[in-house]
Image (cartoon, rainbow, N blue to C red; front, side, top):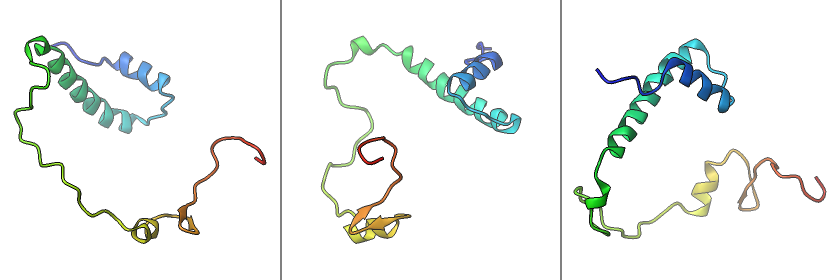
Length: 99
């Protein structure tokens, strides 16, 4: 069996570095998810990327890059928690003049 991708101590250290305060239930749910992501990254690291040609297309077909209609300003602002005069209003996060 493969060695664990992320040890319990490693997960605890990651929580401290990220300044996360997870309950035991949250940690028990999130650690396996993070381990799965890291395991996938480990598999990607094992691939031989040197043999791939520059600009080589992916095996999966991609949809054509065609313009499609987006939301109108009114539709976008209708979903906003706070809007004023046609703009999104958000809390100030940077200190500046008049702050």
